[in-house]
Length: 133
Image (tube, rainbow, N blue to C red; front, side):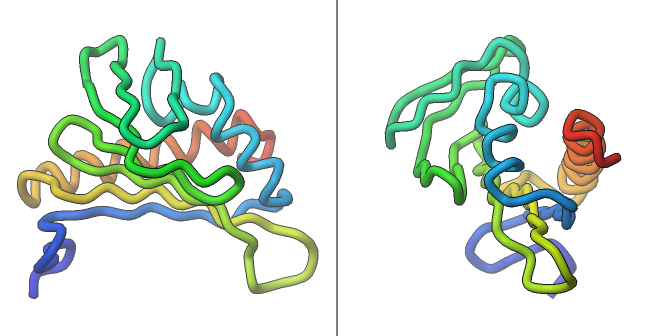
């Protein structure tokens, strides 16, 4: 099978990074209005109840599929699905968090590459905002 193409979710991309911060610190930022603006878009009030809708300033609409505080947010984003997850790192000394952005149901390989670039940029912006990049 082609890299990034799955049987069930179509084209998908994931970007993850281990950050030298406790998971709760990373989650608090990602779920905050400043964090949401970085990964979802400006002007978005992120709902937390399943089925609640949102719209970005750019006109992208979607709804919450699941919201588990301290763990993950899963939502539709136009015709795709985005998941943002924070977990404790299992490697190394000290308390570290793993931040993951995952997007599935992308149109094709070209959209997958565009979204990879997008999520890598978002990750770098999150690291800068948290003072670790």
